[in-house]
Length: 281
Ligand code: ATR
Image 1 (spheres, rainbow, N blue to C red):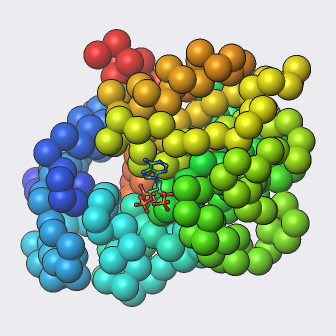
Image 2: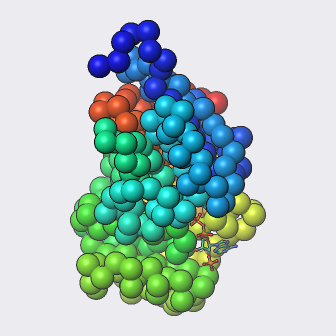
């Protein structure tokens, strides 16, 4: 055990850009409420620099970090151990050094999404028919946890269908539960949940959705993985089109952070408080 006078355990979020990350604030609130002596900083680390950075960080006593763009894929190659869910997502967002000194990587984005959907929003996910917009890293990261949560099926619609097909091939265990929808193709059946995992909102653009998505009696709920201003275009359009409910991804951000905190500290922090505070601005 560490003597009480030892310096606090060090954590950080790294990426490029990283200045606007909410993670330092979220983890500071978690640490204070859970009585954990730790620091959580932020550092700009460019693509290609991750392996060297974690070696130096570990040598300086660093215990773990969150990785954001553009390092999430690079993280898999920079560590000694990769969890099954990070491997199938093709990306990691949480790294830590285990007791033997090995760097480990996991991906808590999917669990963060599931907790926000089911615990914070109270949306029923088991048995739902899901439409997933996008086929990049964010989309890939949520497919495994959605399948594990017992969704009936996931149709993937992407501007570039070949990318959606590649994602389907990466999840052979899904069988017929995972399929590609091409642009302009109508849905085979009404969906319960639409997830926007595209980055279109970053440039103020609106990704296409299939014809007739909102015209059935069974109106879908819509969830955007983006939050803040970046998500406004899609969320406003979904509301106007008649979505049963619409949510941004702020709760997913807080819950993925909680799952990282749990991996590092063995404690599940109180997420409701920090989420309410962030929502209040
Ligand atoms: P991330 O890691 O955030 O998922 P990414 O791997 O670059 O980022 O993927 C971005 C996703 O948003 C892709 O599915 C992309 O579609 P393409 O594969 O066709 O590029 C989608 N996307 C980005 N801008 C878009 C737009 N204006 N309209 C529709 N889809 C868009």
